[in-house]
Image (tube, rainbow, N blue to C red):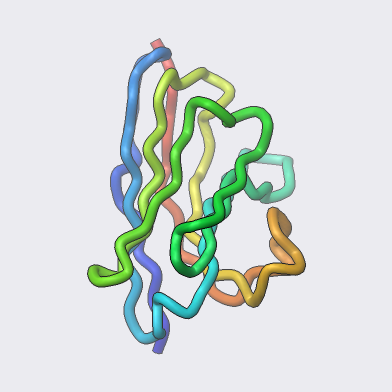
Length: 124
């Protein structure tokens, strides 16, 4: 059985930093492109970052570009999201995702496996 488990979400002040982790089991982690999504009440889940199977290619939604950094450690089957200069509008549930392929990025339709999510709240 495949499991993706996120950790690291918490309350943080605007301008602060946070590092999310996603540990995978039950799949060949290095075979999958990975990504992070986030969702707020009343809105669709949106992709915010992508990383290829070997970490060579990365992509970011414009709203987080320059502030967030995605990375992965295939030996440890772990995906990371470093979040800097956090803003209140970054408040959301953040989800780890394993993509089916590289043809439908930043959309839930392109995801094969999901984590359960970790809550990030940016507030003063």
